[in-house]
Image 1: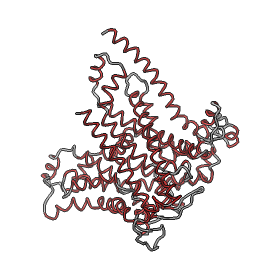
Image 2: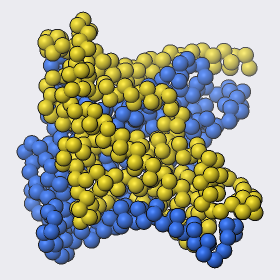
Image 3: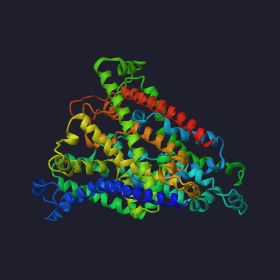
Image 4: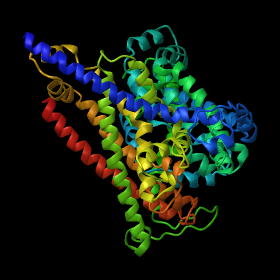
Length: 279
Length: 309
């Protein structure tokens, strides 16, 4: 017994050393690119050209002002906020009213309907017909058409349906007995009770819209409508060789995401992992 | 289930409120998705108002059996598979090892590591791509310095197609390993600590504990991660768009569909807006994902039955 414990203790120690070495190498791979970004954003162009990796000595903060001014960021960020907020808001409200009756089987064909949302994940990409649809509706290169693309998210429905199943049925009966109507019940009793699931879905959906790059490339041609992702690509096209300014631009967009991530870490991780898992 | 909120007219309320969400789904997503198969039989172009002709299986014939173009298509298909195999395997292994390490209570600062490794997931393809373009700056960037130290030279993303392709694989794994890790971590947390204690009582070493306790009990997370990574990597191409653009010798199917359908190309490859043809290519990708996805799922389910009994 004693012997076994000793040998065990020894092997764990070696395991710990190996673990830390592995983690250290990973930290280099994850932190390295970020540090390079920060370092470059604080350099002048000549300093960068002379030695791209050297630690900055000039602390050239004017890169940020430069990038902000030249990149038309306020406009792009505002567009991204509008798209993300509007589409997420409309989607989540409609999704709750789809998920609740399906979960409770209050509408006919609840089970086949749910199946339709599940198989969505295996269907062919809708890219081409979707484009024809938006074109046909006259909503190509139009913010409304662009927002329409993001009013759907089958994974979110599945997450909500599963969560609503955990609410006791007696709740519905009691509320109905008190004379509470369907709309008011879902809106002011169910919605607050499923807040964790709603938060997960909101985060999953909003981050997806915010980071989307393919849809703006296909659907938006007018610069005034670009979201920040497309704007950043345009900026790279023009200032691609001026890495200090470009790095400042990228950093200005990375930083708020990182802060948001640290504040809402629990919801974000559960949102993105749940989204992935159900996918 | 019994509906409690009234009868007659008011019984229609849930249907009315359900309608917008269902309509969005049918019109914007499900309908177009199914219509892909119909468009694949036409010569649709990207132009508004142009006539659309029914051309049967011509798009498929052209895609699969027409000289150089088909050869390019099969190359792209092969690359899609290679991309998927490498991304899936490496991301799976790294995610698993990292999760097992970070599940060990003796490791310090576990939250820090977890947060750091998950972080790229929230940044999205554009920022991931730009951060790495800078890190791989060929004229004295950090990776170039490291290569120089070992007496190597590389143009990285601007180098040979194979070289650029390998870097996209690496960056794809860097960007998404956090999700795999988190799924494994939540799987590990469901394994009761008594199982480990019992194994330790039996004098099992670390490897035996992993092989006989952790690995079999982790089966659900293993299945989720494998399926997820395989399907995801077969369809992924955003990082190709941001990092190298549409370049000969690097295209995967997803990017090919986009380039053929929307004519946004760069470099030596040109194409017009051939959306019927792009729809046919979408169907090829769909069949590929379906066949691989279903066979893997069948295999995993049999394995799970064998292990879990």
